[in-house]
Image 1 (tube, helix red, strand yellow):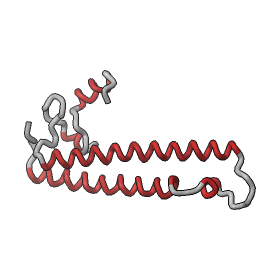
Image 2 (spheres, one colour; image 1 turned 90 degrees about the vertical axis):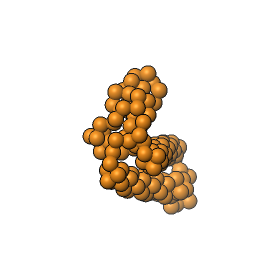
Image 3 (cartoon, helix red, strand yellow; image 1 turned 45 degrees about the vertical axis):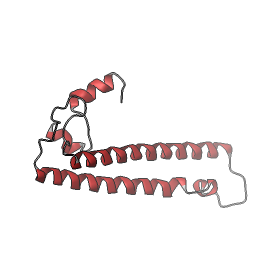
Image 4 (cartoon, one colour; image 1 turned 135 degrees about the horizontal axis):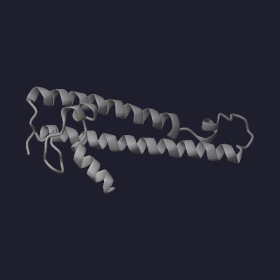
Length: 130
């Protein structure tokens, strides 16, 4: 099913998605630079020659794992944004990928990379397919 949106609306969504993409990429860079590129001593703040306490190592590893999870989540969003931009180019943006019905404008405005209408999203979540 082809989009119901006018060319002007598609352009606005495209701009919104591009801006969102830039924000997500900046967030990924920031997390990577702040957490993933530092050594264990840098993370702990220990500049002395003394060893690092095991509890500090565990805490630092938890923070690093948490940051890796954030980066992973942000990359998933980035992929969703890329897919939405492709749907705009293919002229099927704003159409549910499952039932092929129109996605509500309110939903598109709040989550511009959404691919399912609310009903299908809930159904898929209930069936644990997302």
